[in-house]
Image 1 (cartoon, rainbow, N blue to C red):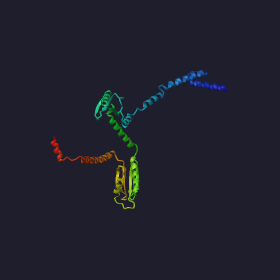
Image 2 (image 1 turned 90 degrees about the horizontal axis):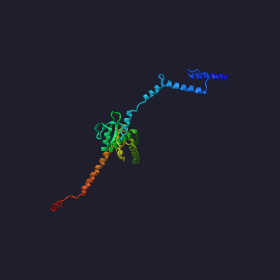
Image 3 (image 1 turned 135 degrees about the vertical axis):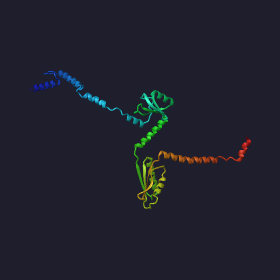
Image 4 (image 1 turned 45 degrees about the vertical axis):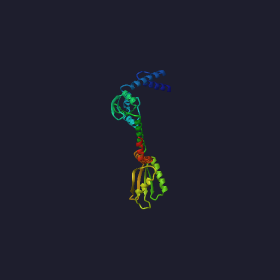
Length: 286
């Protein structure tokens, strides 16, 4: 009785899989054939006009975003390097070494100019039509790379503000220790806020006293905020920063000019003065 029930269930299951074919008893080989037919029917249904699977695949392929040219252009701005002789575009707009617009040129002509003048080709904007390139010397490329590195360093880490507080009656040894700490912070490109309290002494010219203390530092500093009186005259405050490149150049020029004048004066003092007898002897010999 149980074997008959199993046989009945199997026959109905195979009949449901093999649609349209009257099957009462199927062997294992017939079952595999019917399963193959079912797979073929399912595949044909998948690509029929009533199915959505194929269309979904096409839609996903169409919806795949193209590479963003703005991102490529921003990458080109963030990194300057020569493209070499492998120029991907046939027609390009060329900017000369001096910054003049040379118009649209064929890449073969550009390569010829690079070889003749010993220049390098740098991509400026790939988003435009035609793309914009510039001819630059090796020195110009190196300078632009240094500028980009400095900008990245400036944007990389936020400026930290360190604080120092002491009173007017601080001992000289303690003051030198505090100033050395401020110098180490400035070398790490930090800003330093120094607050000078009046303490028990009367509050007189605290800003001038603070400025004199800052002048005792052994390194050159710049001011974000110069010494000023705060807290109703009970304290003075200033904010120090590392010196800029312009300030360092000005200091170097100022230090070189007195040495040059002193050496010129020394050379003038070493040369013996010309007397009247020397001039007369020279005229007689002539």
